Amino acid sequence: MIGAIPINPGNTFLCRLSLGLPLYLGMVNIYAIAFLSLIRYIVITKPNRSQHLSNKKSILMIYILNWIIPLSFSLPQTIGFWARFPYYSKTGLCGPAIKLSFGPSYILFFIYFYCFGLSIPFQAIMFSYWHIYKEFTRNRRRIRDARVQFSVATTEDTRIDSMIEVNCPKKPIDKPVSKSTINKNMEKKLAKTLLIIIIIEVFSFIPMAIVNLIESISIETSLIYQNYSLPAFVCSFISGVCNP
Image 1 (spheres, rainbow, N blue to C red):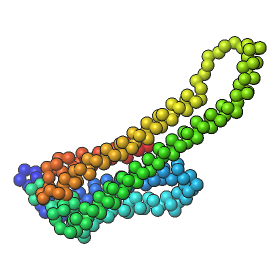
Image 2: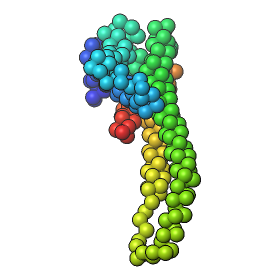
Image 3: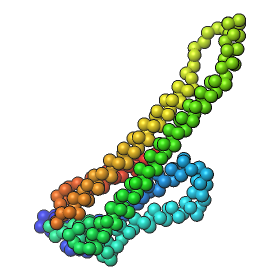
Image 4: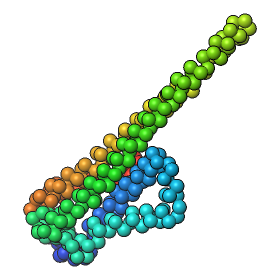
């Protein structure tokens, strides 16, 4: 409300569009992160299959799906075809179509939204990065085992070099940092980076999920949704910014 005049006089198309458009862009962001995570998972853990993702047809298909699937979470509600965004006269604004008390169509949309809009993309992100981390740890063990085998295989060469140094002493020089030390530091940094990504992915979506859950069980639009829906929505974009 601006003074005594509602921002929107009723449940008009512009009122629903003012909610549907940001929702659509937010879902595009979520699916983009999910698709990128799955692509990274395939490229890193299944490199033999990653060649199918590099052709133009696959790239175009992923691009289209990333922009088409999110339409199902906002376009029917904006048009009014399915679970139309409700209008609240007290605020003069339209609210999300997740009110369980509004009938079967809203209950169905609530289930659809949380399954395909939040749960499945979020699980895809977590699944991808968890298996990327596991692949990373497996490769680290392989490298460590290879170093041990190489060390055993070169023991005799090292003994001979030591004998030569005793008979023909050289001028001592500063010992450079070994490659193994550098690799260990890089491995630690990569492990920390992956862990930070997973934590950020989890916590960036929790506020939006909580706000929408509270809104779904309240009869009227809740003060929590009015005050915190926008910050929670913006918080979900942090995962995209921090996702390398």
